[in-house]
Amino acid sequence: MLDLPARVHAALVTDRREPAPGVFVIGFDAPELVRDTRPGQYLMAIPPSGERCATALGVYEAEGKRASILFFVTGKRTRELSELHPGDRLDLVGPLGNGFDLRDDPRDVAIVAGGVGVASVLLPAQRLARSGARVRFYYGARTARLLVDADRFADAGCELLLSTDDGTAGHYGFITDLLARTARQLPDAILACGPTPMLRAVGRVAGELGVRAQLSLEETFACGVGGCWGCVVPVARSSAQAPAFPQLDGESDAVNARICKEGPVFWADELRW
Image (cartoon, rainbow, N blue to C red; front, top):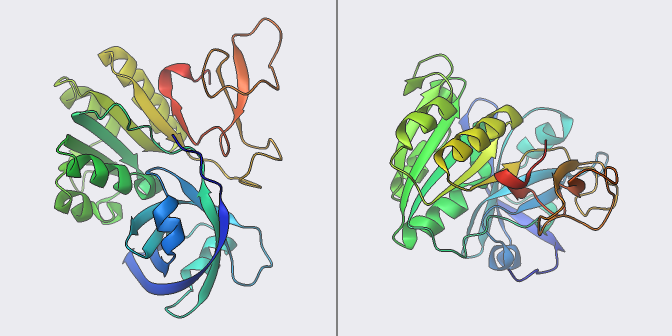
């Protein structure tokens, strides 16, 4: 994949909506970001006050001149971002990270999202569906009202398979249980983004099915450019994503990779977590 450099974008907010309590989609005019973004990449959004650090968010939508971010309000930074309105300015750094590798042009894909992980998988779902691939979208949340924008995936041509922890919509239980049960109609590939326990389970199910999975890891990034080594995960030393340093120890088959730089997307079978 062509590694395009990230840049600072002085974007103008164009729209704002709250699809569920405490969940926001902020759209902005950023044509260069749209042009350069690959599915699964993220950006660092700088709160307008400048008093707090930037926060990493997946690029949710990217079409024409408009891009957007989808996020849950979880603290002061996301609260400040949620209070933006059309006409406000928002500084962004991106696109960052590697994104999902779709070069093999899979024809049958299972995409798994949990919670805010939905923000990173709409772009690959749309691209794959437009290419004629069958896309099964496995979407899990705590309760029905947090199955945010599921209709966007249906409109894109995805088959929806839903689950909720409380049984208010779809399968009663974890989305990975539904994946294990229904993906016996083997997909060519599995893409996933969500909480770490969910991603571990997706990796386990993928291994049992004999299907390679790409996992987009969720992490709090301090810098977003790989300078601080504050967001590492052990990967196989033989992985193409393994940096030359730092090694865990001389006998281990793993090395530390930076989620913000070498990732955030990793092959499940190459993770050593």
